[in-house]
Length: 436
Image (cartoon, rainbow, N blue to C red):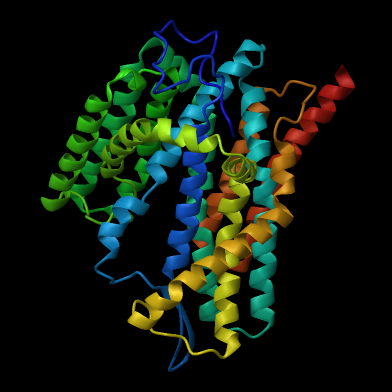
């Protein structure tokens, strides 16, 4: 995921200072380190949420953090999705500009991204469907199986939204080149309007429109980062922006406009995450020089490169791994401490270490598909409508799992739709090769 920082066809702009881009550099390792760190935070946070115990009627699988008073403060640090989408916008900008320079079209860009997303996604969806089927056949109580399916489905919202944001990259980048301020303000204004209507009507479902508007706004900020404009600010200015935006967000939460729990502001997304994105953008620019210095170490560089090549695999597989480990705890016969008790907290370091080791092992075994899809040459050009059809098929499968993830049938159909998404692109490759 190492990215170039400039493009010959990008609009004319002043070069970024050394604090943003080292002279003569074509890559920014700070972005790779930050994205890898975000993945680790997501895995550890979800691992911390795993609560397993034996109740009066059998095994219980629940969110251990639910009701814990310390979770809201923790969420201000652990809520890294704004930074994820911001850095994703940076990556999308640099990749699309490089492809434009080579004469590639919209369909080529989208098809490449869909391959990169749905090759690992198909494998993960099939694996989860098999896992749920095995649990049901093994006689695990239906309520526990349904809970496991639901828990494994929830992180997939990111994949569905990321597909939609990816499909919008070329047209929104065209808007960014002409009117960068408008490109940010329009989706941000729509996101704010959704929040206002939701608050006025009390209908929570209205807020799900911000799965699009909030994250498109953050992605547009990533375009700004890629063109170097924020990096021209002094460190003092960046510190003031971070502090001011953070104070503003605290005031909004204290006034009851938004929840103090940043994870609650994720489902559905609110404009609190937009403000948090500004904080995280400023902080990232402040620490970027230090991240680049750390990246000079060979161990860090190799580790970050390994994770970056398998980032979607890590995201897709970590929750099934957590469910399997939770099941292993239940059948082990070991005494299970009550979640958030003193004994439970003392056992967390060992649990988190086991999770990281297990996820790394699974990713090492399954990540070769995603890693192999990077930079794979594709001969024929892909028509835009075909690439959009692939994106629609894959996103439809993810939506189905999000709505009905507790049912085995939903996972089976989702796996079939993800396979269809890849077959649509494969059919385009074959037809293009025949007509050449």
